[in-house]
Length: 437
Image 1 (cartoon, helix red, strand yellow):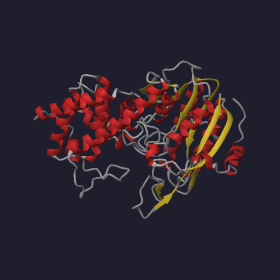
Image 2 (cartoon, helix red, strand yellow):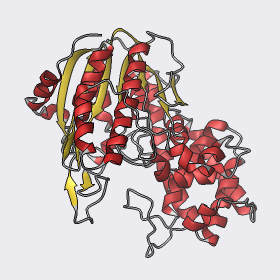
Image 3 (cartoon, rainbow, N blue to C red):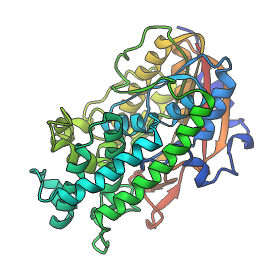
Image 4 (cartoon, one colour):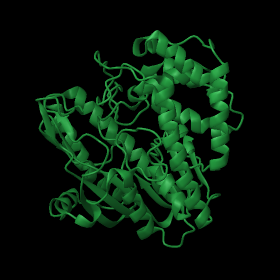
């Protein structure tokens, strides 16, 4: 175990200057959703420009294997495929796997056109098909909408080509929130009593056609580059546990970890989890997630549902932060301690799977909870250094385009939105930490 000086790490970040080249001020929404990046809404997406630049800087040969232990909706894997690098991702959320595999799988535009026509033909014929839904489905959807969505869903299930069927299921999943009572601009499950529910088929086809256009661009670009078959695979895994990769097999890690006490991802994707969980014949084991939300939530990093405190965080900086939080909010201190402990295990697994001299690029932001500065970046550097990583570069960038609300509630410390008078801005900057094994 190497000697690490916490004060030196803190000082390095205090004096770190903003790098405007990494802010990507000119990146517009169209660029952020280019190729397949706009297939499905997903909270806290980081912009593809960051991944593209990191691949360019730290995977120069084009033969590297790239890994994202917090794969989310697959931004890293999509950019790796476009660049011609093989990639593998992991995420505990089955929705993340569904979305990512749809995004990294280019499909013949002619084939998609054929199945779209067949889908519409089936929709005209198939009426009255339904199945028993979880009670929460009846909470979020009215009866007529459920019947229409069932009709769409059964038509999608009739698609024989598994890749095309997954593509349509991704569009269906994205469309569920549009057709529900869910308040669209809310970052937490919240009913909008005034919402005018969109027609399911109209909304579904609108988004499906958008995906089909994006797939056409993606397929054309990969075909031009000769990268249609470049491997990109997503697995459902808990990244705090051992990953199914050989030690020393990965060249580059690019990832953006969940934020401490951040989004409850299980809640935010509950509509898709509930709907697909109601069909165990097709979505095997998904009912375990949808019917046991509390247990499922406990497995997420950054969740507030864990009850016991884990002090294996391996960081003097983290210890000081937790002690300060405990003075005013012991439950919150437990949440943060568990977060840092989980991240320490993830960094240990990153070190194992990386090749010697392989790079780990962590995109992470600091925040403030109950008046205490939560130095996520500094803690990450200390934990990684103790595990045997060496500093390569620290980059400070403005958060201009990251798809995450920069607001927290002053009292609770939870994410909030512009309508909350007790809001405060906390994510003005974030850091790109590059460390070497």
